[in-house]
Image (cartoon, rainbow, N blue to C red; front, side, top):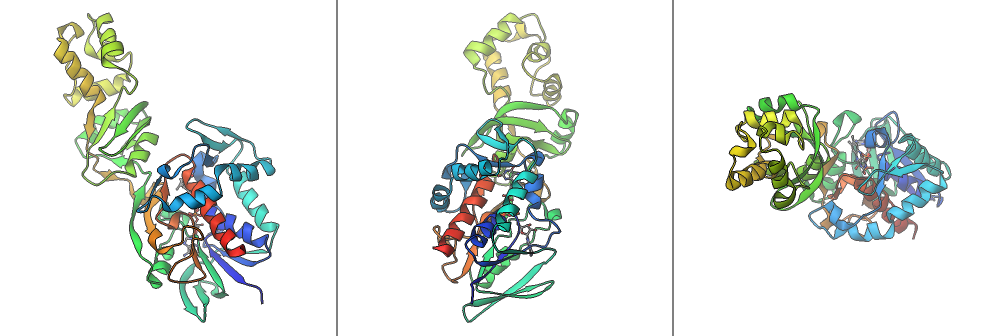
Amino acid sequence: MQTRITIIGAGAAGLFCAGLLGQKGYEVTIVDNGKKVGRKILMSGGGKCNFTNLDISSGNYLSQNPHFCKSALKRFTQWDFLQLVNQHNIAYHEKGHGQLFCDNSAQDIVDMLVNECQKGTVKFKLQTQVENIESYNQQFKLYTSQGVIDSDKVIVATGGLSMPALGMTSIGYKIAEKFSIPVVPVKAGLVPFTLHKPLLDFLATLSGVALPVEVSNTRISFKENLLFTHRGLSGPAILQISSYWQAGEPININLLPDFQFDSQFQQLLEKNRNQTIKNCLAQILPKRLIEALMQLNLLADTTVKQLNHKQQQQLYNTITQWTVVPNGTEGYRTAEVTLGGVSTEALSSKTMQAKAQSNLYFIGEVIDVAGWLGGYNFQWAWSSAFACAEAITA
Ligand SMILES: Cc1cc2nc3c(=O)[nH]c(=O)nc-3n(C[C@H](O)[C@H](O)[C@H](O)COP(=O)(O)OP(=O)(O)OC[C@H]3O[C@@H](n4cnc5c(N)ncnc54)[C@H](O)[C@@H]3O)c2cc1C
């Protein structure tokens, strides 16, 4: 009898893995609770899917074991995925920071993955919720909303918990726990910050304002855009640092990341000696932001010439070392990724198979590997799926 493989989750990792295995002649069934496959892919990258990055290393990933992702990322790289994208004549472009997006639509990536599945023997079972799993005689019984599925191998590709509206469930973690596989506590990553009152009220007028900043904590910094929202802070810089943020911890925002004190800043003040600080700074920062900082008593409402050297330095420090303590994050509702997940200690980094349960595999975001913003999460989905498929077909 042929090996029956069931993949739970028709997202990025599940679809890619299904195509690879189906083309090798395995009897693959891919089960998903949604009406459509690849729902997160479709809404990713603003509908254009940032499907990988030109510059990928293990340093772009968070995990309790930072070495775990290395082997898979090395064996199926961004160049390998690009080769597939090129074979399917999908037009793409780089948007900065090495991020690659579809020119046309994220649908191109979903169509490519489905097309790869159709080249083989992949059966789709949609609108089917997996509820439980049992193992017996080296095989598995999957209990679903549409009945029982018997399998020789099960691949868990159920993703994380972000965007619950898309049908995300914790079944992947429950399956792990069922086989005594530890799960690293999960939380939202790549997620906007909410702010306490009264700071939130002071910044309310800034909703929609974006500017380049460098945001940091004691461990890491990111130089990208910050966006003020009616709930707090967002934009790529904030999403990136949110994955490294602990509750209660302050973050430091440099509002002039490319402005040196001795050269540019002092020159600006010299040139504008007779102006108010507000009008002078308005040449380099959004006016509404300066007004908000004044309301917060962080900037004085005087003229530039009233400042001595020490006060000039203080003004510069205020703008380049603005300390904000976020209230929290917006949580899974808007998070792009889930931090934590199935412990890498319990999986083989070569095959993604559970060490304690043969024929049970975990791939993609369900594992305790979360990437930075910029195509890193999809690349992890492709690379981990490839590692698993390669191990099964070897
Ligand atoms: C708004 C948004 C934008 C993003 N943009 C990008 C981007 O541009 N670039 C990037 O690299 N990453 C991006 N990400 C992250 C990326 O989408 C994920 O990391 C990636 O989709 C994970 O792939 P996966 O296959 O592991 O899981 P998913 O793609 O989440 O797929 C999991 C599938 O499992 C199904 N499922 C879950 N539970 C069950 C169950 N009990 N029964 C049946 N089926 C179930 C789900 O419905 C889902 O279809 C974005 C995420 C979000 C939320």
